[in-house]
Length: 430
Ligand SMILES: NC(=O)c1ccc[n+]([C@@H]2O[C@H](COP(=O)([O-])OP(=O)(O)OC[C@H]3O[C@@H](n4cnc5c(N)ncnc54)[C@H](OP(=O)(O)O)[C@@H]3O)[C@@H](O)[C@H]2O)c1
Picture (cartoon, helix red, strand yellow):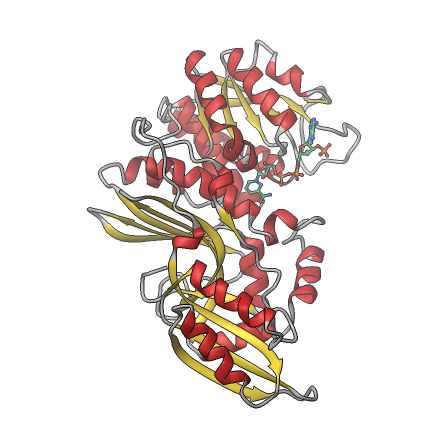
């Protein structure tokens, strides 16, 4: 059997996919009984030098030539972005082609339209590579854990942020220096906004929470905070207190509704997510039968992402792809998103204050008046004249009460710089 493939995009992932297909050619033929022929690849710049050998005429400059080619069975969208990508995915599905995509931004914002179009055209979409790169996370969630209700899902889903936070602490350097290095090494994009502001992680959480909970999650209901305000001082202080800081995607699923957040979390060092370092991804899932499992591995990059894309292609060829976006039939009920204000957690805050008598007592009093109970407090004089640093960790408080107290402290003029606040996990309560 010969399967004809069309690619849209021959960048990092596209190149990895072509290389993997060429490398696995005889394995596919001998062990799985099919051959894959790459018929067309659409790119933006047809003159660019490519890192793969391809027959003449394969590279074209118009994605629609791929979507509309009657000789192509499967279209693999690896161009990124939303507008053109959505157009090519919908057009391919309407032509009755199967689609594979690694595009989390597209699915986070348009999954419903894409999957409804697939359904109407008796087609399907493989999207394993959209979350956590080389880790077969979507398969695990949809198939392996099908017998479970998912109680929570906590994930380190952005390798760039994890790399930056790990390097800052290991090398005692601040955020801007490590970000610049990460860009030079190709770990961060030239425009790193989506990564460092938590948007990329929230796109992935939208997809994973939709699968876990059986609804189309609306990306706009995810609370998002990135890592740009965290300094080396905070990482060191939290390290001494027994925590590692990670940018986490958090999904808690209960009868009350969905608690979906992306923000930095100080994780106790004995939690399995805590030691996950560098560009690695990891996801901790609790199911009601299986209890706790954790998956970890390379969350991005040419080869790991190609592994997931080619896995989907093979599944489609073997007729094994799950045809719906969800693992169960979507729930019809209206989704209740729990607002961040109502979430209860412990906090770390670092305040740089005027070193005057009574400031510490006043701050403690503001916290108490706002129902925030102090767990530990540490004050030290700073070398800057008349300034002191106060580090406070709290017992659990609602986000509303804690930030109300912080605003009162700021307005009272006790602080000289913007307070840094990081939520702390306790055991497995995030
Ligand atoms: N990189 C990763 O590690 C990773 C991991 C997981 C998921 N993903 C997702 O995979 C997708 C691709 O990522 P990537 O890193 O491979 O991107 P990339 O390196 O920027 O490659 C994008 C490719 O798309 C082509 N392209 C862009 N606009 C086009 C247009 N209008 N018409 C035709 N071709 C067009 C580009 O052509 P030229 O080559 O001519 O510029 C390039 O070949 C994205 O959705 C990304 O979020 C990436």
